[in-house]
Image (cartoon, rainbow, N blue to C red):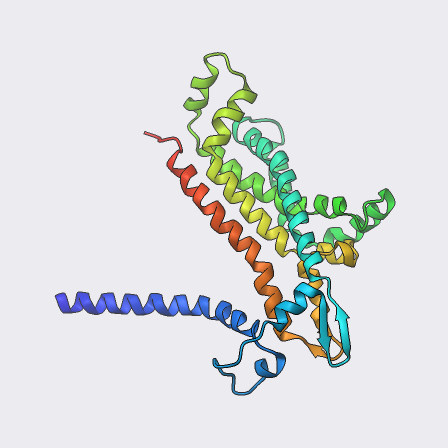
Length: 285
């Protein structure tokens, strides 16, 4: 009996190790590629042993990419700055609009309420090309084409439905009696929403904000069509590494590492507040 239990634990450990290796290996390989030149990367067979170089990172930071055809100007750091500004601004606006709207959908029943909520959610799953052409014409007419404000507003198609539906679920899970107890002593809806509902739904709001930030950060099509080179985020700016003289795999790998780092740090930083918020949540009994 003990022997079969030991074998089961070993098999379970091996299965977990294989799953972990399956997900970690691509990340590790990209990290290793970022410290290699193109000649080493394209070597057959590939090798884990090589002389590391920081040339890829230096090229990204300096904005000078050396190719066989000459030196190209790559505004990677500016694209990275654009990604931070666009994604952060889009999430802040989506939270300001989406959290009160989510509370309204969770607590109030009004005509066409579910239809409106589902319509907003459908924007999240609609193909971007469905709205890009008319949106580009509208933006050009009202002067929002090739502006940060225009990109931030179109990012609401990504962030707002996500925040609305995730946070709505958290508000619906909050016991209504807690809010009624606060209102019964004379506090209004706004005070109850701000001091009771929002703190209790804090984990959901933080999770929704983080997911919305990641989705906005990873968006490619909207910024490609609606913005010029100086307004484009890092996802679009990465196209510069595909040059006439070849694909710069080392710089692409280094760009991936640098572009993933902000979202990874944000996730690690937010995780502490998610756990703290869950421990402070209301207890239903």
